[in-house]
Image 1 (cartoon, rainbow, N blue to C red):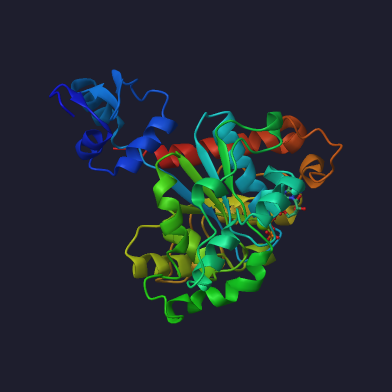
Image 2: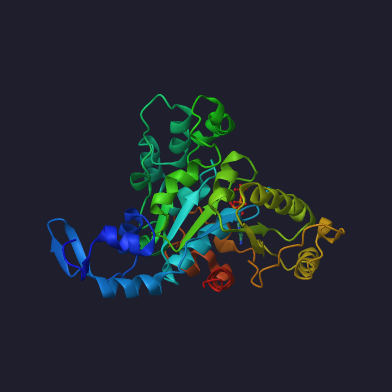
Length: 357
Ligand SMILES: Nc1ncnc2c1ncn2[C@@H]1O[C@H](COP(=O)(O)OP(=O)(O)OP(=O)(O)O)[C@@H](O)[C@H]1O
Ligand SMILES: [Mg+2]
């Protein structure tokens, strides 16, 4: 830029020690990003001092990437992850990207209609296409992150302005077992555990939160999610069978975190589908006191804390798929589970944002 007092995107990027793409993302994401002083032919320009102040204030804000994970199926992972994403976007006014990594596509078809999903799937706008491209390195890649992401998703209010979705696809079932072989298929540049990371990093700065719904396994697809996660949450029904595998998750993610050299914090365990019976009450007490199963063994990893808010089993959530049900409001969609889910989202937010420097 010609003038010392004016800076363009490249200078702001230099100032903030980020890429030009990141600065463009910030402009889209933050309403408080200063308006340009002028629009020159070479691009917009800002007053240097105003931008320096803004960048300084802004630093410390990061994207919290949270995986919802449990090896057990049907424990409310998807329901909880979707609700937390919707609440953070609509009620807390955060920019949220929901990433569906489960080939069952439950979250995807909850957040967009099945018709929209089928259309996106046929155009390769899903994570399955992302992985498929890497399996066929000789063909031109079809996946494009900016086209793949759907905006304004959810049934709440006919769509939530700040909620985006990277959808999954049943096609992932056919290819997921081949993903670990990517590194061996002559495509030495692709680390099979960093495929999602490489695709998502260019847009990550647009979001305050990325919520990842993982399949009930610790396979390569889940590890792609953990690779970009800053923390994870374990939803569980508070009974013996459902809590059985929790130690395996903690142990495995801990080893994965050591292998990759990245901190990956167990934010906590959420009790889901809670009923007022003695068994549920007893397991919740054990989880509260952190004396679950294997965790008590000498030298074992500590049990992550239980979130204070527990999610009750409700009729509203159970009938979720009913098209006639009123799912345009939080109360209609979640019924009596809404207040606890809202409390849970607040707890998660406090855990993430208290760490801000
Ligand atoms: N709080 C709740 N009250 C009533 N029903 C619930 C509640 N949470 C989840 N469910 C129901 O339980 C079933 C499983 O929930 P969900 O799909 O969220 O679990 P999941 O752990 O993601 O399952 P999967 O392992 O298959 O991905 C669904 O039919 C869902 O509607
Ligand atoms: Mg699920």
